[in-house]
Image 1 (tube, rainbow, N blue to C red):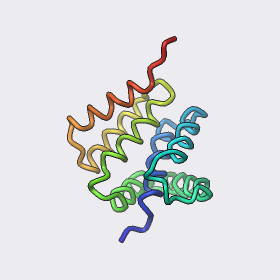
Image 2 (tube, rainbow, N blue to C red):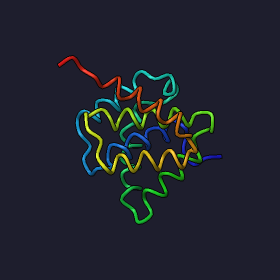
Image 3 (cartoon, rainbow, N blue to C red):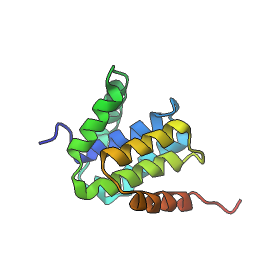
Image 4 (cartoon, helix red, strand yellow):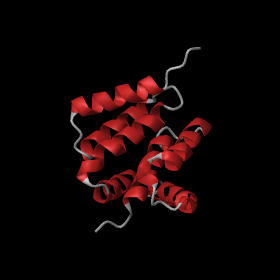
Length: 137
């Protein structure tokens, strides 16, 4: 049994990706809020926990073994059948501000490795996230 729920693990993923470059932009925060508001994966999630889950993730990330601890919790809480969902949400947040930093790219690579997502699946997810960011301007 995991110490956090799968929904909280998804929140941890979103927060970790957003904070990976030491800047949680308004665009990323808005995307995170939208994701929690409309995805079926969050149907049973109490939205009132969003702030406390975000804060607990940030506190954990700031500890000595922070990133490894957060990744371990995510891996433990997410069923293998939902690894693609975790990666897709990570890509959505990373791409939401229009630019991928080296830190975000490295974290996405780490998530792929921890959740054992094959390269072809990852490429398809990444392409979908990039396509959703296109504008006509």
